[in-house]
Length: 95
Image 1: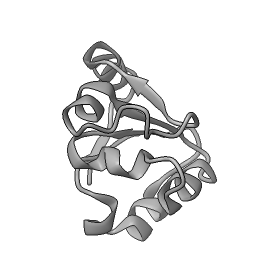
Image 2: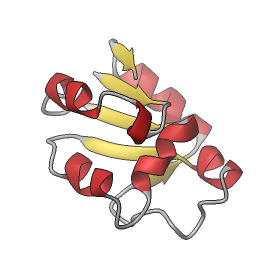
Image 3: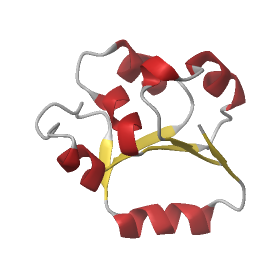
């Protein structure tokens, strides 16, 4: 399943999201969700301990002035990569 987090992790049910994640799922951080990828934040560790792949939309990182602040553990991806993730996963959930 593809999960997209578009809200700041401070303003969403992160615990609920974690309960819904399954092995092999992908989580894409978009819009304000890219804040969860900031190096040193508690969210980077929480998400990296889950059995999933976490990435963040590069355009949203750039738009929020967060270039250079994103954890190396999080892959920055393009819109093309976003489309590829939607093709890979037939089911999706937005947070």
